[in-house]
Image (cartoon, rainbow over all chains, first blue to last red; front, side, top):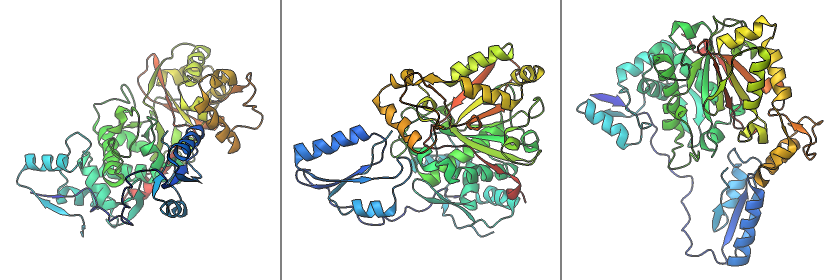
Length: 88
Length: 358
């Protein structure tokens, strides 16, 4: 019996994933502020900076419910780690 | 007919069904096997290029080619004559106003409801009467599930992955109704939204499941209970505006019409009265506060509402037109409200079925 696949073959990632750092201490972190929970995001930024000495760059996403613009993704990708949004 | 999808050879039905489960190509229920013969019949019915695409389905971006949509429509149990309705619904969902990317991944429990209007509803056997949101009718079930399977297999938002819906609802399997157009005094939804009278059309709107409203009596009595149900503090609309849906049964509509109420009269009354004071809304917590500001800053709260004044009566949608009303269900005691996702999206989009008919 022959049947047809309902999916496309898995896409190849646009860029290889970075190696996961062993610690966040002192890491450069892109923190994407998606405007969905600003107080939470601010608290997270404070904790990452004060407790771990991370170098946090806060990148503001225009809409919390639509994909990030490509330029913001490229910008975030320059950091060691990215927090890509707060779900709500 | 040139089809490009991978062809899989299996020994028997049982092996094929398990193959779909193993690959996560189904939503948890068994499927109809998409054999080339069934898929070709689906595509032949619309007579278009199988590789024509409606665009990438978020979040993973699989192309919604007619071929892939036909495969998923077969899996959902569609007959070829159902396929144009599936295509119109998918086309509507891909409209940016619907924000499908957000609808499919939000923590909120909205799911895109498909509402069928026009003679095609009766001709293909869609249920618009008793039990309209429930089971028992192939057209509602098959079209509803075909859309969900297409989103599943092409968009790839899975509940163990990027579909972050906290609770979701059973409409994830199939969520499709037809409006009752014979037993109603009012123009149907698609006509109100700009389609020619009598046109076959589909409207999609992301919303919660139907909340029962004990709605029986005079217009004043029905409006009293509907307004209360629409502005429950748990609804996103109370906090973030957006759109909402009211489903009145044919007896409700008849009672309104007998007293001279038009659908617009009902809509306007609901918008004026389904409100909460800013103080009540603020008591729900700080997280909600920023959304009201977001809506105000985006210009969606009418300027005359001072959201910082505790006595202000806040509306649940930016305008009366954002309260959608359809007539469906049995002639009985119950209506339903289906709150939306709020100002984040999931907004109603309507498409005629005609462009997809051969």
